[in-house]
Amino acid sequence: MKSLITKFAITYIIFAGLLFGVGYFLKLENSFLIFAGALFVLALITIFYFIIKPLKAVLYQMQLVLSGKKFKKIYTKRVDEVGILAHFFNQVMEGFTKVASDIKDRNRILDELTVATELQNQLFPAEIPSFDDLNVTVKNRPATELGGDSYDFVESKDKIYFYVGDVTGHGTTAALIMSMVNAMIDTFAGLLNSAYEIIVNTNKNLKKHIKTSMYMTLVMLCWDKTAKKMTYVGAGHERILVYRKATGQIDDIVSGGTALGMIEDVSSTAKEQEIVLQGGDIVILYSDGITEAKSKSGELYGLERLKKALAEYGSQYSSSGVCHHISQDLAVFVGDESQIDDMTLMAIEKK
View 1 (cartoon, one colour):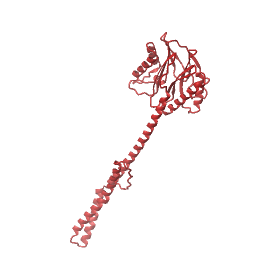
View 2 (view 1 turned 135 degrees about the vertical axis):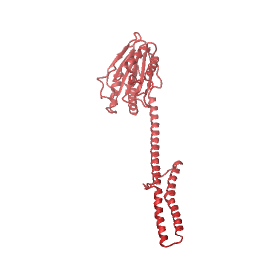
View 3 (view 1 turned 180 degrees about the vertical axis):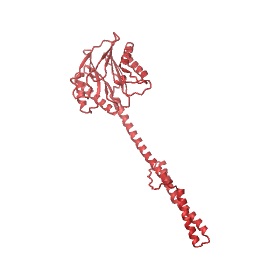
View 4 (view 1 turned 60 degrees about the vertical axis):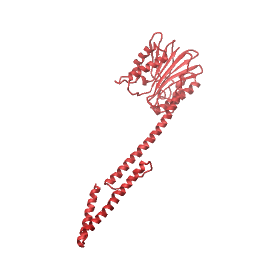
């Protein structure tokens, strides 16, 4: 690549030589003056057409950019300084255009995410209802704006259904599946008469609409207000923990069953079984985001630590106090480590 200075020097030497030769051949008396004048005119013309004019074109496009007006790409085949400047302008503007487009797309996505988050939050109970025989407390903390954990309380006829669920992964897809399951459970609770029937029919309808790799674990409790009896049905979820007020012991119950959406029919694996409760007993439902939370050293919070916390706080507090202090214990254990999964903790205490 030849610079402008090199080009001008070569041009002037050639032109000067020609003028000098012509003046010498014609024996012109003022050949030097003619040569100097012609060289000056040539310099002016060259500077205008090769530097000033193209630079003005580049600067004009820059002014358009700075004033926020529409600009044009500069087309040139030059490979000198002016060409480099024009190419640099084109590259910078192309980058700015892409960034502006990315920012516009990002703002659109953030707007849509905000709306989706608001809609998801509306699916959760606005407040915990009051029940005659039970005290209920829930804490939920999603890992991202859209979580895959779900919980709800559905009262129908003489029964109350409590459940905690966890969709594989988190984010938009998990939130959509969670929303579908919530809607189905709410509908079937008003039509069917048991937690078993609700789980079987929810699975059957969910399986039609999701991929094989997507599924949702869930455990549902059913409180019969007339019989004063608690039963449960598992769908591949975490264990059920029961703190026994009279003895201070912890019952560790395998929820069992098959995750919703994993197979077409769970009627043979889903079983409704009773949990006998005495006054003061507390049932704990949770998602794996709690037991799989990690400390700075990489240690898991784990089931045993959760059971130990339940035994300690269950002897001192009601359901709300148990939820609060287990959450505090978890927060201290995790410290400043980032949350990698959604967390849900539900405590149900028999009055």
